[in-house]
Length: 558
Image (cartoon, rainbow, N blue to C red):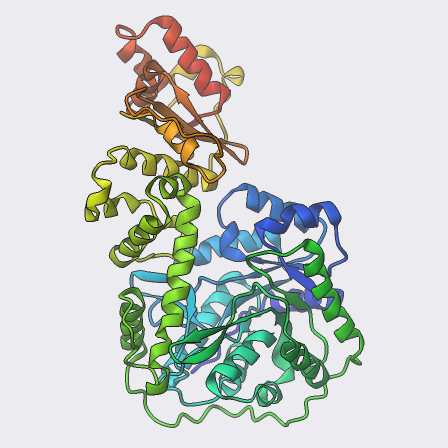
């Protein structure tokens, strides 16, 4: 394979990494923004999951604010470098825009895959370490580095099973990829311990086999122990403190390879903020106790890998079958090593759990109406019928209403269709790019009326046959009063839009809804006004225009 390395940004990248204080950093999540901004803890840097900030939103604005106080690294979870087909070019484009805006000190991804063909699961799936997989990952890393014009780091995964095609040790695979592509390595110490325990390997042997010259960053995190079938596995959950075994392994990594920028990750079930800072400070102390030298105890063989045998299955066949088994929730994984076949449950559980959590955030009122158990069944049906297609999960769920005909118990809730549309509209508005609003103050009235216009991308409106606004409000988890909804009480005309980074929703009059609908069908305001001048009073048209301009709903199209 011909080596492909993006070189133009590498010098700048090395300078940035050198610039980092060796103080450890924290994986930044939206739940932690307020604490970090208010307390300004003495962290070396912050690391954000790239996909959470692709669209314009308050989260992206807050990350830009944090960038004024801390260096930022971007850690991707959705590009799927190990996929057997082509990388998603839209995903790469979104990442490039984010990288250009944030100017991160580090960009990283995983030695894993999550997509093949038209299906994309919200989990990091295991990769068979075959010659074909090696060539695939190298090609995709080279493409990513060329596109971003900078070095990326590759993180070792947490593993729960091995495939029949597994041929060489993971450290050898990682070293070979770094040698071939010029990428760096992000060594996740927790993942090394989790994988070694689950697969019967020696974690210290893994560390000694990694080439120090490729290591650019460390990760630390916590795990849980879970029974899967008749065995116990360690599951990489990022919702626990770092275990003593992982701290010992981190100490060994520092002694073998020297200090590197280190991130502590905690992704859910957050403790007091002080607990997170204490974990970072433990990493600082561990680094302070190590003299900054590269003292690798082993001589690393960097010759090309010697593949033991041809793969039994092509990478495309294996990935297609694996997705079928995870989405279809088959009990056994046929192409795994026989003793690991039941462990497919881990990936099924991770995938469905992530999807359920996400859809619960998008449709909280719908979940409140149908109940938690029924909502779970709806999600299971939906994932089977419509698995995610993109690495950015925020695009997923727009046709959730398609599952309604599957459930007889929902036929007596005719308002669910509108409720789902209302919640999806608010979700889309949050991430929408609104553009520059049309300001009537700056434009003469005659010219304003004849401008070619459209609603900005956040705007949604609908006339509903039921009191959807109240159904939504009283079905949210935060609603604590007595529920009082009369389905015959009102017919709502609803408007959703975004101003700045805040999403607003309100009830509007039916006349205003008629005018908004006419504007969406017209080339300009004058055409819409003339079309309705005989059916709507002038004062109604005037108030509707005031509503539109007050909230900046229109943008010019040319």
